[in-house]
Picture: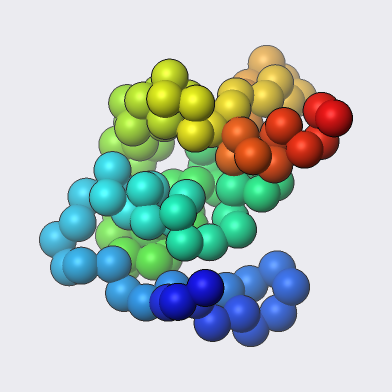
Length: 99
């Protein structure tokens, strides 16, 4: 994939997302250009990952609307996890696991 440099099986780096991009653009880029959502991710993990990519200090509330939109569009699936929380996984991966 263009723009990705795989450093190990669990880490990767992407070409810089345009400076000043907000949570929505950042999440879209992560979803479209990486394997980050191939495993279920809690909101805390998503925020930490995006903050690291963009050198920001976003909070969970900055992502909830965008995550909901991605779920409604069928690009992400909510998966229940311990403690009554949800995690998010790409629907392609979710569909493969269900088969």
